[in-house]
Image 1 (spheres, helix red, strand yellow):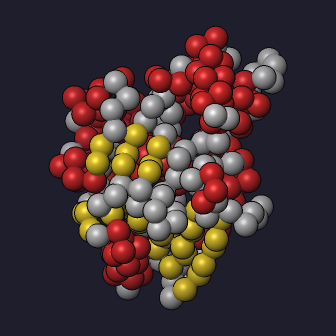
Image 2 (cartoon, rainbow, N blue to C red):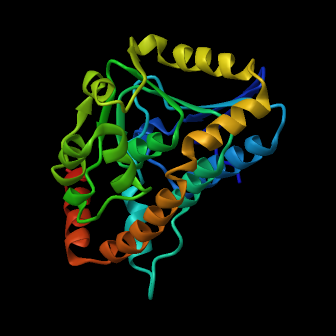
Length: 254
């Protein structure tokens, strides 16, 4: 699957995926998820690819899932179709190749939760991380109800997942959501620098070490993702979610 909204570049053992739908703040569509999933799966099986970089445009990572897609899924009976976003997340979960994210500007919803499945995250000073699931009548997804408390701590996770509070770049650094904060103009270069370092290391040793790092909690992450998937599908059809979507689209037409 390919889409012009995802630019794919292979260079010196590094695969770079760039979200480029600026007119919609890089909001993710099913086609974009599909292209990312296929690229990650192919890269993981390609011995020439030693690292993967995921980034957005210079001023925005992604505004999250395209809400029109949520509305379409919610209207289908008896169950919404399988989430293409979670299929992309599962590809990241299975990926043994190091994944490095470069984030400037907004990282909303799955724009934040996908980062929990990356190995390194570098943020520009403009970065803003937000998981407003409750405000949309939904619930956490992508195993974020497990991983966000594990990475950022239960208090910060409650602020983000329950209260819908956002984090700026320095707050994200302080709680361990990102590895470093740099000037916006340097974010992608910093991520590529780490990707180049990883690409020079022994490939099988890197892949084994990544498996070992995730070995303890991988079964729990998979179980949490599946449990959240069912609850999220239920919430998509809820009156609360439908009212939240209607309010969002009403505001966007003003």
